[in-house]
Length: 566
Image 1 (cartoon, rainbow, N blue to C red):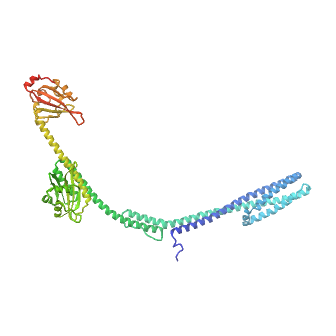
Image 2 (image 1 turned 90 degrees about the horizontal axis):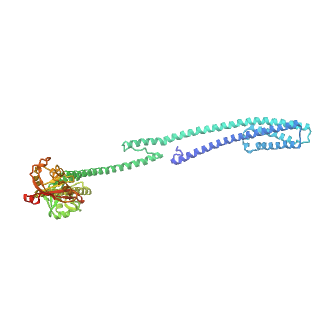
């Protein structure tokens, strides 16, 4: 038999269960509230009955006092009747209160006791009504005795009712405590039952889901949650399985992409290493030929090309400077290219030699195509914004070529080649200029030396070395200091030389005997020299060095000038 709740959703079941629990709690609350109200009524009734009992005792005492004193006057009678009237109001509040009716109906003992007290009180009230100041002593005594008997009866009955009310209150209070205990126990069992259902329907599937999640984290991508269309957790498992399937598919796609990116990254790393290797080699070698050969080898290694070559412009043609790879087609067919090829390759290009988009208008492209090559990439080599030539890389059939990546790499390596080759050429030009300048200095017919601000010799030519008698195969520069020259010092010429550091050009004639300079062991002979000194300025206009020109005078010139310093 199918249960009525089977077709309901979990939300509907939850709200039905919550409604039942609410109704049970409401019923329990009403019952407990009723017991609490009964306890309050018993306590209030007890208080009022005790108050009536005290008032009756007071009435009895008042009658006794006036009967013994035999003082019955109008004021005395009125006082007694007023007390009876007040007591009657209190009695009516107890006996006629509707709130106590339910208590009295459910308790026979209390109902009968209050009825008996009501009768006795009616007797007392009627007797007091007969009380008059004109009554004789015997009449007053009879009335007193009647009232006294009934007040005693009312007091005794009130005591018994007070005890009965107290017992009833305790009974109701005990029932309230029992009801509270039963409610607590009931709710404990309800919580345990709900916890059991929660554990079975929610926590157990969650624990299983946690186990599945751990298996997934451990790398078991095939693990799946248990599906159950009849529960929320089962539906959640179904959706999670769909999510896992989707994530697994996305992971496979992502792994494929990552593999491609990893390959590209390796290719980029290789290209960076190639560029680094080229620049490192360029830092060790100033040979353009070596730089070109290193560049084509690195281009093949990093790009995966079958062959590569570098062409440099010389005059109106392009000449092959370096090539590497599995084919010598550049050496055989294209060692020299015309200026038209240079114009064609003056900007970076990467294209297929065959197919609808292939280029066939260039002589080099035609030769490469005839040699079985499929793809060509080229980038111009420039230095100081002037084109020097280009580097070309070619690929054979079925080559896995990333045209954009190859073009960018060739552009980068071409820049490195341009900078390295340009700097190498500039260095060679500067070196040749330096050698020419050194030859010029060494071949002038007079001595020449350059000194720094501290007087240290930076350079001197061969003529001056001959004057000094110094071995021309060794370097005298760096060891000699003009301010420590004994000849200049003994003849007082150092001050004249120092004025040159202040911006003055000076000239003086001196008899110079190198043998007097004991520190350097010079072998030159005594000569009469005309020495001219002048400052040398740096790019900022500051004096950085001074230069001295040593000119040997003949005997006649020496006699004419008298050998005096100027």
